[in-house]
Image 1 (tube, rainbow, N blue to C red):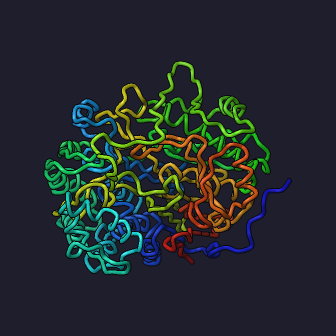
Image 2: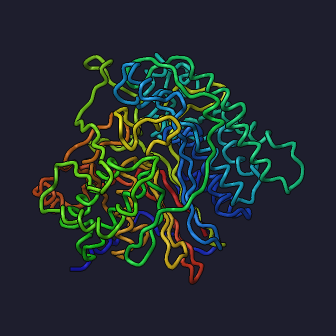
Image 3: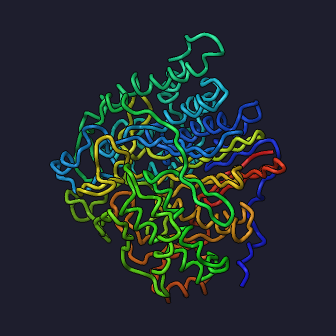
Length: 604
């Protein structure tokens, strides 16, 4: 039986060229990255420029106070590297402190959910070690859009409207930044953020007095110190000392201090890899969810090509069940500590897990057994209401604004991919620090993130809240290599769905022979039968969300197998973008998601 061929229609072409390619979740970031390539910058210069633009034009999806992970391959290097921009828990973020405050979950919004902001430091590290441009030139695009303005996306307006009452009643600094006379800016309205433009100006100025072109790296390092040891750390730590409303419905002060900023530095590290169908898939370590994709691929590797076709009922069922097994292991074992990936990614372990896939949808939480390790079983709640909220109250400004169980898309994270003519390639997923994460810091023009909501307050878990440890992030870009050379960089926003949607892309490209755009456009699905990484951390046993274009026959067959299917609409799931390169010819390619009319690829 052949793999389902792609539809004849695609929303855009897969772009082709030889000079350089950029793709992201917003056309202004894509255009900015491509402009850097056109002016002689490399892929790393371009990615950094585009990323800072994303902070400005997608403030509901990411911000300077958030986090990021990237994966890249520098031309001529020995292998892929992970850019680690996930901050750790502050020294004062102890489980006891939260429990004593009457909390049973880390809130989804408010400064108690703040990990050390790491995105800016990580981008500056990439620029220093692998870029070629001066910081002032890279930040010119973001400063221009922050000071001169840009048109508000409809989803930006919708997000602001959803938290308008929160801003007016509890977060006055956010109201001052994002509302106009107490009203939500309309879609298309010109948004400016002078305070953030001044923050970027001050980062540039931190190294401006260092002379000579040879001090480019020193100027970037001066900006990093201004961030972590200087005015940014000082303003942020001082501001969150004031109690403010959290998603719990109660008021608390933050615990992050200047020393927490000063104690963190972004870094690079080796990627975790897996061989699948003749290529190497590279991901972050198990301090993120990246290896769950590798585990899923290892489980699916034991099936024939046509048996893992996402467009068929049998293939979709196997994919869903394999993901549920891998994500149960994510909950049970992943965290900022030594994780037995040698076992979790082994063929023998995958065979054991594969044998659990039956004809019916499982409703159980089934982590595997690893000698010497006790699997952590998190609270398995199907619904949750904070004790402090009265009946009828709604918690707002919480979690990641992603796909709800009903299939409603409220927003996501961001993503950017760049490849240049020299063979440098990077995929990165910035997130956190959304405008709805916590109150805006007036002096800085942004708020802090809420990534600690991905930790548990229960003792003994691999991701139990622990000072100095990173929360197990969902941010998970992907690099694909053939014979040691990078051929694809990709990623997607979407919280727990990020790797699920990337899995569909990889199966359709690597197994089904789809082009990048064909794979991005193809019908998507994902499971919700896993405890959510974001507040309020609930799950739906046997839950599946699908695009209607998957087809009535496939959807009905999944329901007949016991899957609790939610139809999300024809074009609702997946936020992928990608770039590619053929090492033999130097030909480049790119594609981006059309859903939401926001993501674009560009290149030549």
